[in-house]
Length: 177
Ligand code: AMP
Image (tube, rainbow, N blue to C red; front, top):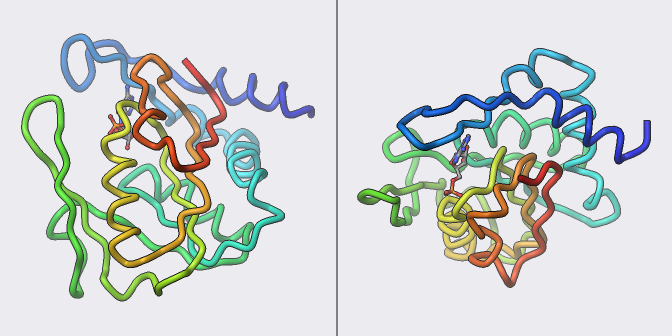
């Protein structure tokens, strides 16, 4: 299948759930995609594709749906996988970054020994919306002096302009709304 047809097949398996988790939000539900192994395989392959010729040391996956795509992408690229998690979930010593949400604040954590200075990093998540989560993850990786080569997501909500927060990075998305 051509890459264009692959993207169509992926988009066909993303379901809109209106007013979840709260009124006014259209939740992009990827469970129909995950339940079809062929489409899941294609998604992982297309997300990894721009990085096949780069040398990546570490794929960083963002909790929780970033783990689903991040781990198989790390496997394809032949590198290690590091999770970025919500507060209180990682057992060893962590670095933490707080970021603004629409209402209030949230934070993300990474194990402080997870990345070594200068390692080449690819960050993975399922969806880029306002870019707050992605920007916080970049800050965590920068704290550990990782060298961010790219950010890859399955879905980009372009109207929320998350990409503007990630101007200095190479952002790759498959399905755009
Ligand atoms: P943001 O920080 O605004 O870019 O939000 C990105 C994170 O929130 C990702 O980890 C997504 O999983 C989740 N997210 C935000 N908006 C949606 C949406 N409309 N549908 C599904 N997940 C979303």
